[in-house]
Image 1 (cartoon, rainbow, N blue to C red):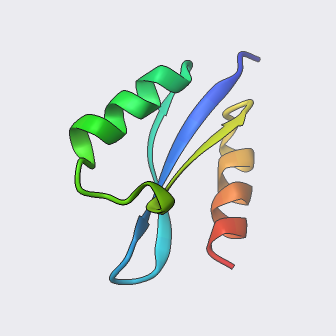
Image 2 (cartoon, rainbow, N blue to C red):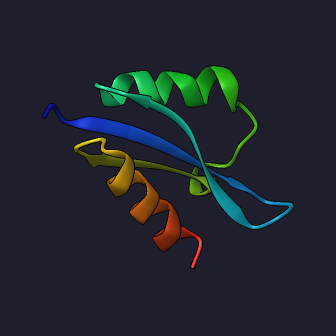
Length: 66
């Protein structure tokens, strides 16, 4: 399986992380932050590098939200 980047963004109102975007390059995730989340602080974004399976993304989401 190809490597996959997943963008997580923190909802500061609820203090929960959400899976917002995924791509095969980190550059695409950074562009998504620039265009879709221009006012979001850098510390409230997280790009995860992995295999992109549903199970892995759910695991990372659970870890971020615990």
